[in-house]
Amino acid sequence: MSAAPERPWGGPGQILPFAAARYPDKTALITSTSWMSYRELDRLSDAVAASLAARGVVPGDVCSVYGQNCWEWIVAYHGILKAGAVVNPVNVMLTGPELTFVLTDCRAKVLFVGPGQLPTALAAAADAPALDLVCVLGEGDPGAEAVPLTHLLAAGEGQQVPLSPLVPQALCSIGYTSGTTGHPKGAMQSHRSILLNCALTATMHGRTAEDVVVTALPAAHVYGNVAINSTFLVGGTVVLMDRFDPARTLELIASEHATMFEGVPAMYSMMTAHADFAHADLSSLRMSSIGGQTFAPELIDRWNTRAPGPVLELWGMTELSGLGTTHAVHAPPVPGSIGVCLPGLDLRIAALDDTGAEAVPGEHGELLVRGPLVMLGYLGRPEATAEALSPDGWLRTGDIAYRDDTGHVFIVDRLKDMILTGGYNVYPAEIERVVATHPAVAMVAVGAVADPVKGEIAVAYVVPVDGARPTASEVIEYCRDQLAAYKRPREVVFVDSLPTTSSGKLMRRLLAETYPLPERTVRGG
Image (cartoon, rainbow, N blue to C red):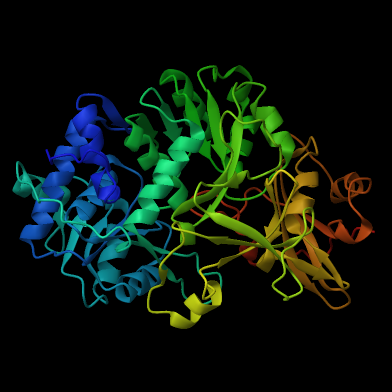
């Protein structure tokens, strides 16, 4: 086991040694296949680090991780960091060409891949010139083109790679954005930004070694990374699901006596709509966290009929290595707000008139942040970096927000998702919050569709509650008393599911493509 520093100030690669020195035999991680102590996680990640070093990986080399949540993913992530390499967590939903782009763009030397993603990975690896090794996160024989993780663990067993002296501001991780236009961009994060995000999140949420956190958030996503590693930092237990399932999640919260659940709005919507929710035992929860996109306040009200403790809204992005704002667990609640900025982070709301002036409380503007959590820039994209980061360090988030007189921030919507209809600005999230409260609606997403008269119209894509048969006219009429005429959805399309990212965030840009409007729909007045 690596010698633990007094505090893991160097970077996230020191989190496991730090925790293992204090809680060696405590359960750190529970997955569908394993229960693992901090001593085991630390030992196994040491072995990965030693094997990588023996295979020629040197500090600064990039190692990618592409696979479903599992204990092997966690061990690979920390082994990479212990070897002094740069970790590249990859969205498991990427296709072969998208994976090829990422591996080539960051010049990955090693690719850790889940068994289910191996065929895609091998095809992508053939076109990634810098790649030297493909390692499968599982047992069995992957063939001649890859090696199983068990080989690396056996080769590195009992060996240690001394933790290299770290420059906190040096590159630690490259996380790729979703790439809504063109290719995704690699946001470069420092050791300091990732570790600080974990530490400050743990502080704001009051995490302790007594916490048991259930989550299905992808480990490759910044929200998932912080949920996992901020819990490891304090010596708590992470119950990590391979993928989200509403019934199984409710069951795990009860059986593991979870003190925290962390997820996105779609997860809460599916759990509260599930038949098991009415009798689920969620009494052990001291708090829950919710982030990723806006949602109707009634969702939290439904959750709290079974789950005690506050539901802390939060906001973050890849360019911040995780959270940017959240609520302090012991502070008075401010429903609908994403909270206040993490300590040490500056936040301002810039007016939308391009003057750069500060928006007054209550006025909509673009959310800007500055401080040690902000990315170093986009890998190999100086123009994109200059567009996102001002010379004095302010990051343009692309979110429309406002702040109240207590400093709490409220997200209105994504600037790029705004619908311009008949000269009016319409925010999909505002419509979604209203439609979601309809008793026959389980989930809803609103997107823009081109219109020859109004330029764009808002279309609501609705997943009905099981057994319900709402009509488009009923949904539109339901909005009449709650939304101005120009804000109401002009069309309603009923669907079985909504397109989401691997973290469960709605992908509005795919709505019209996934569900083309039928020839005959109902238009709102």
